[in-house]
Image (cartoon, rainbow, N blue to C red):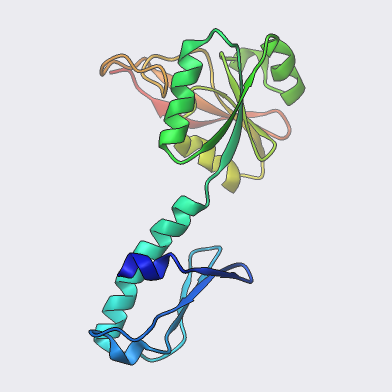
Length: 196
């Protein structure tokens, strides 16, 4: 029943709202309105009972999860048609909620040059999210970091490190770093993965 209510979210200025109808265990919450902002804040516009607050908290948790799933990030992936690890990375992205637009390219060097990927950070495929490059087998955590770092124009997992997303081989992993490239061309380490 809660999921049914959650599915009736309606967009409003910068967020989503839904009104909670009278429920058997939460009769005093009939006029409660929950507002979700882009930042994930919750505003409750009434004074419900403790039972109502508990019910609303449960609904809010489900709703925020639903909203997070609905906010799918799109990524364009440029790859050589013959590369198998690229398709594994694409599957990894899809498994983590990304909508992937797959582009088969015969000249990946031209794609990388156009996007400003430094040659020493090159890998087999190149993604683009909101105009920023994602070079190689970058984990979703570092891809997401691009949206919080206006100083970065891209992120890279240089080479083809064993154990990175799409390059799994059992539990083995080669030591590698995820490098952020700033708008001025400087490089910074975003993540450091030790060998195992």
